[in-house]
Image: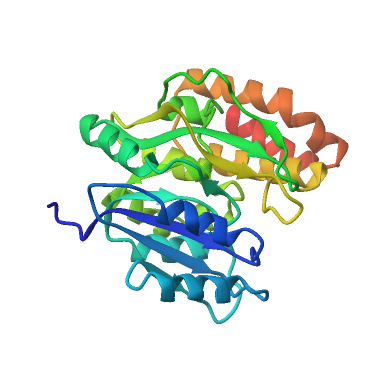
Length: 285
């Protein structure tokens, strides 16, 4: 075997998701693989029955599930970094506690692909989107293989790369993200995970043409159902973190400026964030 204890570490973070966590755990446990994998669950001090449900599963599957707990709620990013630092797999598969996997071949297919494609630093796949009632919101009925680079993600091209589909190499580079001060300020952490991992030379992100997970839209979701005004503000904050902490060419700077002018500039002006808008323009001009 390799230097790692497990081929895959499944890292899942959860907070007050008693309605969903069992479905996520069932998706992890149904995986059929020819390698060992571990399940790491970071519970961010849930106040409902989430922790109790995880503990019940841990008792039913001894040695398979590792529960990480907190004395107080610390937020999604510290919770995820704790899970990542605990992972000892060659690869890390991500899934939030309110989403779930639907295909028992998922881990095996992704590992097989990454083992055969050394340039694949991240491997994703297609997912189905449902609402709180379980009704279908979105599904691509004609999935095809996709390939993305650092430049693609930098400019917002990252279709079908939701958190619940991501598998990444557990590299030293990935581990160092915890030392990046900007990372603790971002809202869309998965986008910055992708950017950071792909910032290594020749790194690529591949999307397999298989629907193997479900992403859930619900009122308690960290991102999916947030108020549109608040969501836009957080997107602009993330955009500014991106342009101030990642490298890009002169041509990319022009494209980023176009994105800002078309998507964010008027919002900043309407909300009297004039100095903020000026600072963004100065960075990109």
